[in-house]
Image 1: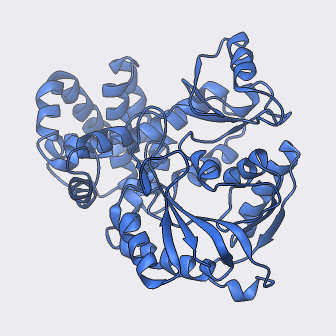
Image 2: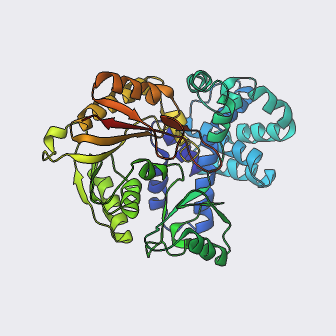
Length: 418
């Protein structure tokens, strides 16, 4: 199943819906095996460059069956990155050949995995002799990070290849960070506070295991993403627009922080359901509409907004530790395409902002073309736009790079001059 998931990702599908589809086809799969499926799929894609480098050394003739190549990658991931015994991995990989309709490949799979077991050190050194093999990113991605972050590029790449922790946002309308940390400790869960409402749990858990989740005490949200609501400079009574709102974490956080009149829009009707479910669980109220932020004339009623959150489409290059499939689904040309789409959204949203109002520009990208370059161009296009310092930050913008506490995000605040 993990090999099928990896194969479908490399054919252009996103990993999360692929895994959801596989699990729907196997509803009786035990919880432990469901977790193993996620680990094998995510781990293989996280280290795919290295695994491909290993296979290139051991397979002289191209493997035309994509699923078989994915099966080998999954088995190699398990052999190098997990504690599963090698003999069991080899045996199960050979059995999977038969189950998948490739009985002719049993000998080859056995030989490849046995050779890795014998020559692991030398084979790993060979795989790491290329940029793709050493860092497990496409080469265009690596070179872009080298240019954008010349003093931190290796740390940025390494951060994207780590297993993510679980970021939680405590609902300060209903409890406190200290009180919720005590609840986690009582449940035997290791966690640490990070920011005014953020808690980092050491390992990812089903939400059903989080104390108070159903009662609205806490939500799942990365600590970096939680900075958006703080940077919006919210005050009671303001009209606020969350312009690309799904799945709704930032919308809910805005309402948890201030008594504002919030409108949340997104052009994906299916994802709007998640916003409404989240608001209902938390006991919050907003106007949720299916609308395209690029076409304000189609949905705007002419009443200006005091604050606009523009969490625009981007490559998501800052969240690859949570979504390693992004590294292999993105193409270099996507950067400029997504930047152009985001620019259209910003220009459209600028019309709905009142004079004296503020727009917070947010991406989950670490590529400067989508971030600083984008906002500089925007200010250059609009004579009434002025960069404002981010509240509590010494600087006109903030580029968060992925680390053990948060994903990679970019923030910039722009005021519309009166």
